[in-house]
Amino acid sequence: MNRPRTTVAALAAGLLAAGTILALSPSAEAASTLGAAAAEKGRYFGTAVSLNRLSDSTYSSILNREFNSVTAENEMKIDALEPQQNQFNFTTADRLITRANEMGAKVRGHTLAWHSQQPEWMRNMSGTALRSAMRNHITQVMTHYKGKIDSWDVVNEAFDDGNGGRRDSNLQRTGNDWIEDAFRTARAADPAAKLCYNDYNTDNWSWAKTQGVYNMVKDFKARGVPIDCVGFQSHFNSGSPYPANYRTTLQNFADLGVDVQITELDIEGSGTAQATTYGNVVKDCLAVTRCNGITVWGIRDTDSWRASGTPLLFDGSGNPKPAYNAVLSALNGGTTPSSPSSPSPSSPSPSSPSPSGPTTPGACSATTSVNAWTGGFVTTVKVTAGSSGLTGWRVAVTLPGGSSVTNTWSASASATSGAVTFSNVSYNGRVAAGQTTEFGFQGTGSAPSGAPTCSAA
Ligand code: G3I
Image 1 (tube, rainbow, N blue to C red):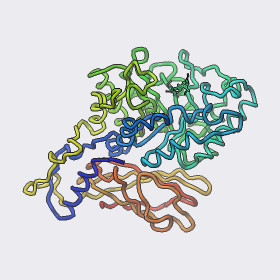
Image 2 (spheres, rainbow, N blue to C red):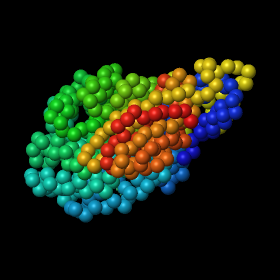
Image 3 (cartoon, rainbow, N blue to C red):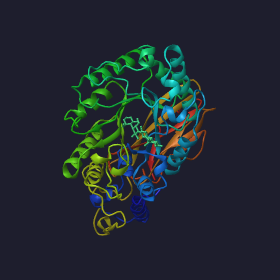
Image 4 (cartoon, helix red, strand yellow):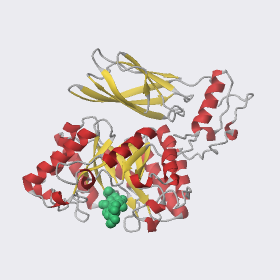
């Protein structure tokens, strides 16, 4: 992946190793791509991807450069994966997963149970036959992609727009418990994936639909129905504008004990007004600790399902719009990156002391959260930079005997069992003072129980 920031990081690391005293201007801390800037905040920045656009070199290079999470725009929907009952076609979606792996990107799975985009055989079903077909679809698809998906939209758009109740659909008519049935089936199929409920028009805290979804999630958490995240599609236009209480909505859902993700962001408009709204959405996500990622619903305006509303971050020629600059600046905490190819504004000044004093990279701390089940676990590790910031980090853990690491993301592991050291990858080594980044690993057996040790690299 072309990540120009690594040039600056490598330069800085080399100079530090030589004992040179550095004065890095604030712009040296500003990442120059969306994915890198989000990673520095412990988040991902993703996009919806259409496989048939990957042959377009402009599209493809923006994808590689800017994003570290992908969602299949249509290729993982029910009609695409199970065109005939119990006959699955994973070929197209697999190619997209391969591309994501090559990019080192996370994948959001979209979507397992939905009233729309059902294949004809499913549209004609009802009752217990439909319920078991839904379960079979979830189980087969999640088993095929086990360990490869960060978050799944298990259920999509199940609420009615007007009254805050459930939307009528063939799935709803199988019984009100169809949503929790879907989540329980999903947890059994891939216990490591985050399980999300995803919907639109749930951004305004005062709307009945938002309250309806909130009450369902609250009830699920109270009764132990396995749900890990709520996706806010956030398709904004004049009929469904960005609401002033958006941050309140995200925070109130997060306070129920779920992650929140902005899953299909697009904002119709242009120029400064559009840019300002995009910046506000990003700031809202960054203000909510459990808002762990943003996905825009396409790359260029011409790729959008609402192309005439020019709702995305790049114009039809692939040039970044003011909205792009606003998003990048918000991700960087208000700082504008220097030209990626020119490190001159951050060039070292041997005679100036470092703003924070020390001549070596600052220390760090690491905390873990564990999702464990019989025979396996997923550990998420949050690395927090000390007062000097980091240009690279290592986190050491010790696995119990008989346990081993089977999969690692956003870090590389030195071993699969016993004493394991995880090191940053190219895009998340630089962490500004007090800021965090996240990585994770999945394993068989039991998770490490002792405190991890973090050191600067
Ligand atoms: O690929 C076929 C093409 O062969 C055919 O000639 C043509 C004729 O209609 O259709 C093409 O497929 C279309 C597909 O997009 C690819 O362009 C489908 O008709 C069309 O229905 C489909 O629309 C997608 C829509 O979901 C379907 O529900 C949009 O691309 C996609 O952006 C949109 O995404 C949804 C999310 O999944 C859920 N939230 C809302 C969001 C926007 O509607």
